[in-house]
Each structure stands twice: as C-alpha cells, then as structure tokens.
Image (cartoon, rainbow, N blue to C red):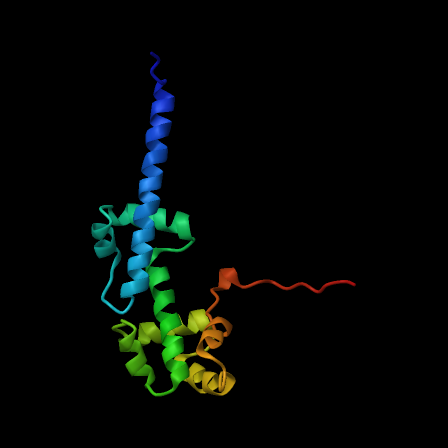
Length: 157
C-alpha cells in the first residue's frame, strides 16, 4: 500500500484549495452582480467568502482581471447607463439608485469607463438608441475599460 510523496499530497491539497477559492470567488462575483446597489465593500465581501480582504482582492484580480471594487463599479456604471438611456431620472437619482453615495465619484468613474460624463451620455444615448430594443442597446453601449479597448491598425489588402 503506497502513500503519495509529500509533493503529490501537497499538490492535491493545493489543487483542492484553488478550486474552493474559485468557487468562493464566483459566489462573490454573483453577490456583486445581485447586490450592486447595496453598500458593498471588500471587507464585507471577504467576510462573506471566509477570506481576508487582501486575499480576496489578490485572488479576484487573478481570476477576473480586476479588483472586486472595480468590478462592482463597472456593474454600477452598466446599470446607470441603462437608467440614463431611459431618460426619466436625473443623473443624481441614477447615482443613488445604483448604490453610489458620492455624485463626484460616480461622475468620475462613469466618465473613465464610458468616455463622456453621465449628463452628456444621457443626452446622446436618448438619441442614439431611440427605437432600439433594450437588449440590443445594452450590448451596443456596454462600457469598455481602456485596457480592453481594441487597438485597430490599418490593414493592408
């Protein structure tokens, strides 16, 4: 009856731990998706996942390419874009409806992700998406972070 070597045993436990961490990270991401309008911070998310805030932040960034806070703000901005396209709420109302507590932070982050301030977006989106189904408008107007923007180079025929 053979027992595995120490490296084999530790590899199994490392792999098992990694899978458990990934499952917790998915639950954190799902919680952010569901509760984006609630007051959420990394410490609360980490407690819910039984991880330290630092470990959650590092592992979330490794798994999803951005910090939990950045992911939360992106979800909030996506929802804000949809509310602004409707046109029946003020920018301030939208800010608070998506869970932001500071209009300045909301406007700054919105401008970083979307490229224009929320008030300008509201005006432009109403015209650009008029008559478009909301599911199509959502895809067409989805924010793109700078690092995700495609660089287009001239194509030679």
